[in-house]
Amino acid sequence: MPYVKDIIAHLETLAPGSTAESWDNVGLLCGSGDLPVTKILVALDPFLAVCQEAAELGADLIVTHHPLIFSPLKSITDQTSTGRCIRTLIVNGIAAVNAHTNLDVAPGGVNDVLAQVLGLKDVQVLFPTGTDRSGNPVGLLRAGGVEQQSLEAFLTRVKEDLRCPGLRYCDGGKPVRRVAVGGGACASELIQAAQAGCDTFVTADVKYNQFWDAQDLGVNLIDAGHFYTENPVVAVLAENLAAAFPEIPVFISKKHRDCMKFF
Image (cartoon, rainbow, N blue to C red; front, side, top):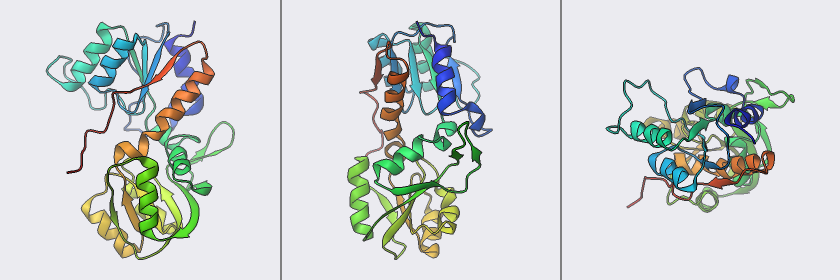
């Protein structure tokens, strides 16, 4: 029977913890590596509904993109959201593992999946920071081509392909041909996308001044939401775990949804 430590070892082959940012918190954040695993629940976030869902499923492990613990904790009680999550996991004997910025940069990770969902062709890693064990380039952003189209047509595609309820965007004044993508809060990489010759950049959590910067640079900047730009990797991660551990049922969370709404 596989153990939590076996799942962690497999995740290391996909997204080595050594490639995570120094400020990040990845790996086993709750529970024991020696815990036998009979069911896995995969989700973008380890929020309370996901922890409760894992308990209802009888899962021994949750695997998420975002970390259960990010900032240092002074206490673990039911008076905080993180405390309630940790308490639920501990009471039910559930371990929590995550791959965050290491999954962002990994080949086949968050941004490769985002590029694939949006139909980008000839996808490349922009400004690689190194290579993985197989010699594949590792880096944050991806860029690829699409058939030339109007920004309006591409916005429609982004909204439909990511199933997001709305978009924020800046019109850079160019048709869409070469697109950079960075799931989650990657708008700080706007200059890099422009330097790589991208006319369009799809990301999330864009600040007010970053939209103005995009307009000055002549880049179409699209904010499709943190959840919607990163959640596609969940299905890919679940599929990978199921293939690596066929004896373990792997479930995708049915309860986790984006809490942000459009009125």
